[in-house]
Image (cartoon, rainbow, N blue to C red):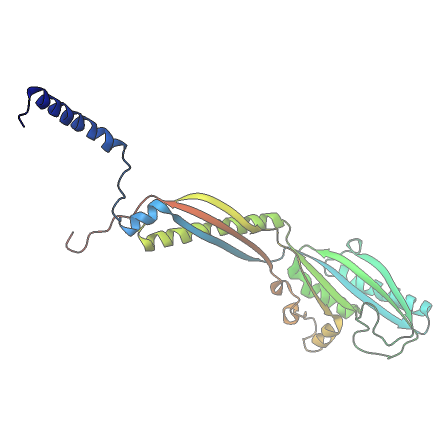
Amino acid sequence: MTKTPARIAAAFLFSGLLLALRPAAAQNAPAPAPAPSDPKARIAETSGIITQGHAELHLKPERAFVTLAVLSEGPTLVRAAEENRALVQRVVGALGGVGVAARQIAVRVGADEVGGSGGGFGGGGFAGGGNENPPARQASTLRFAIARPGDLDKILTAAAKAGANGNVSVRYELRDPRAARNAALKAAVADALAKADVMAAAARVGPVRLAALTENSAYPPQPNTSGLNFGWFREALADVPAGSTVSLWVSGAGPDNNRITAIAMVTARFTLSGPRPTPPNRNGR
């Protein structure tokens, strides 16, 4: 069939339209899936690094609150009470000699008891033995604060020598627990940052940039409480030279045995800027 000039013109026109429309269609078509990239670059583009920061500070106590018992016995309640008052006065006087003034001591007269087996007064009984079934007993408690917990050895030794003979309770504290909490929190954040740097360097990615930080736990540290019986002091005093003090460390009740722990934990999330450049080899390539 002979092509007429009109048909030839129409064919050229149709071909031109196809050529004109093809670039626009190519622009609107979805981009082809990229070829698999380097694993280090893919890590940097799609994820990051998450670390857990942890800090645990063991702090020396800065003050102590002491409660000690003074126990007495006698043939009657009246006689037991008189004996107890005299014994309390001796103990208070001895404490004054080692820096605990009488005005700092709160004295509370506690339970009295007639008969019994000697196991009363909070379960401590009379340290050091004695009559198994005394007719009457009287107990008092002395409470006071110590600004320097390191002085406890000489303070309790003096009390024991003066006749303190019941249970002892010592509560160790920090003056500013929130400051200890904040120090632990800062250390936990530093730990999280350091771990992220180590992980990024090992994976040859980064540098890292902090994206989010979450506190998991960080509370003001709580006081530690320790106790012992003056019966232990009496036994210990028999083994030390005259004029010496008994070390609470041996009993586990001293300040060095009761350091206060401040704990903090955080979670940190980091983004990555890309793979780190590979250093040249020995040949400079």
